[in-house]
Image (cartoon, rainbow, N blue to C red; front, side, top):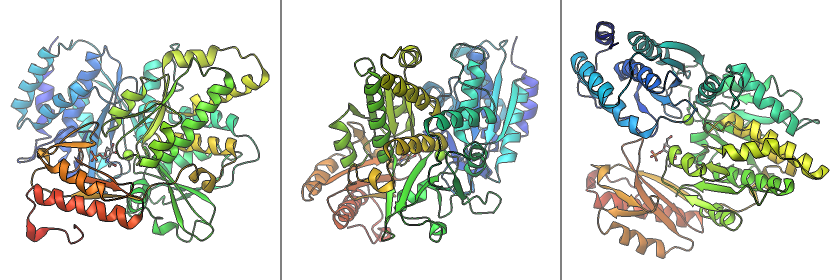
Length: 548
Ligand SMILES: CC(=O)N[C@H]1[C@@H](OP(=O)(O)O)O[C@H](CO)[C@@H](O)[C@@H]1O
Ligand SMILES: [Mg+2]
């Protein structure tokens, strides 16, 4: 059997690649303005079908989203059969196919690819796909469907849903009827699985109400869906749910806004009461940031590092209470963006590993532990349990009633977690369960350690590719001499730390700095930003005023 060339040609001609644009499958898949993604979606449809054929007809996922980015952006990423991100080696194949300039070139690249990757075209292909609420979504999904049609793949449209629900669907579809079944392969199955575990962890009386900022995105729909199962355990108040209002998505709200600006979304000013817990989802509901106002109405951020801390500590306590602490090693994975005081607090208690930015690095490192907890500071993360750890947790025979209670809790903790990927709603339930068990409010949780004041600055340079890093991105190797200058600056500040790396998702270089006080953290960040700008050949007439 060979490729249905005629079908591919006819449909590919309907989705020509625009001239002069170069696409790249990066950390977050393809991501750019929604209006230039039509050809990419068609080709991703073809690629997803081939990926499925390569993996013996296992179902592959495709998610159409641009997450926390502005509404005109869109993007697409592939999901591998266990619900994890696309295998790295296929990222470059995706890039090559997306950049072929004509149908002829595309088809010939496709034929080469099938040969070199040894894909058996006669195998079946199955793809499940979904999109977020962006206005450009429906047309992009139609282009994707043409790609599936061209290759004869069987498609399942999961509609408008969150990125983590799509990952969940991929895993449940592929494990259906097996010993490793992950749940029922529907959105209701997802809500039921998470909420029933949560409701067993947190019984009556219900928790105090939680405010959820839904970023005016697809998280609003999923949060509403989930909340129907939480009436007796976790009353929620959904805010920023205007999914149909043009321009509202991620605009002055959502997890990225709160983390980057370290402040309350203006829309919550008259909503949130002092002492009340609140959280923000991002535009595709895979990131979660908590916050609260103290009695003086001061804003306090509880970011991914705070989530790691409270979750990892709780899991360690449970494992100990079950009597499995010798057999189940719990570890944490962070990136250089983790607050220095979180790393200090955690390292005194647990193994902590630092890896380069990007979920795939964190996820893979976390899989090396029996139970691995990872969150990026920006709120993307989850907990992963190795298969032997899961088997042990579900087969262990406790010897005392206390152990038995702790074991049931541990089993429910496992079931409330979406292990495939960071999941704002699943993480929210996990955090709420931990807070309930520890009788913590926002303030008690926040007091585990005090964040070092920090600042993240974007620097626009002529070519960010000249920046090369080492030591999990904490040090610069190139441009030569820059790291020594940064070290000299850092040494001047009490508790100072700063690092510089090229972004993997935006055409900028990021500077992070932290220090003992807010003015010092800002000053250090802007001095390093100035250094970077000048040394990378930034135009002096365009130099941002705040750079020192
Ligand atoms: C500082 C920061 O938040 N960086 C983000 C951002 O990566 P950059 O490579 O820094 O652009 O987007 C990634 C994908 O969403 C996310 O994994 C990462 O944490
Ligand atoms: Mg996201």
